Image 1 (tube, rainbow, N blue to C red):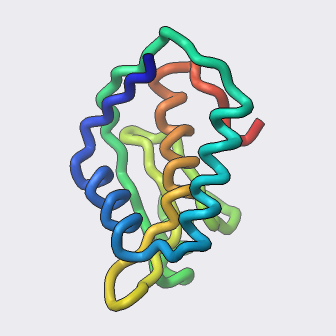
Image 2 (image 1 turned 90 degrees about the horizontal axis):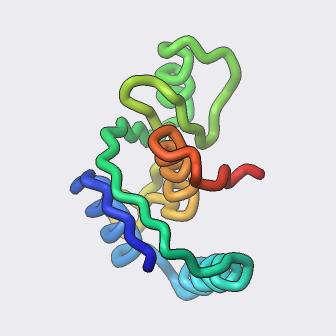
Image 3 (image 1 turned 30 degrees about the horizontal axis):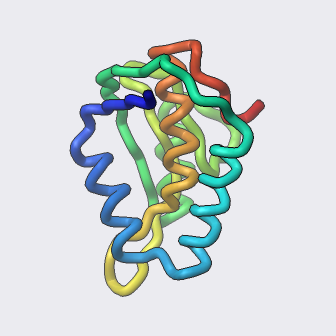
Length: 129
């Protein structure tokens, strides 16, 4: 049984909104391919994850603003998407616009959220390995 509950209402709303307002058929195809690879390369488990994780999500449409915010927390490199293990953890990333609405890359946001979950449960695989 897979069970994952994250009590971040705005995060869930952002994911659902991005999926419904902006994904074209190519995005859906890539999303489905990603899920097929996940199903193919993993085995069922009876384990579960049940955590409440406060997280600060910082998405920027302007790269200069994002780099300024990134440097303001003591980082010296440039950033595209990243998770910082601060208190609370922070996710930095991009936001764009599509059809006049904000559009989030849900695969990258989910990837970074996995890093946040690792901070609460080290049984979780690092998506960068």
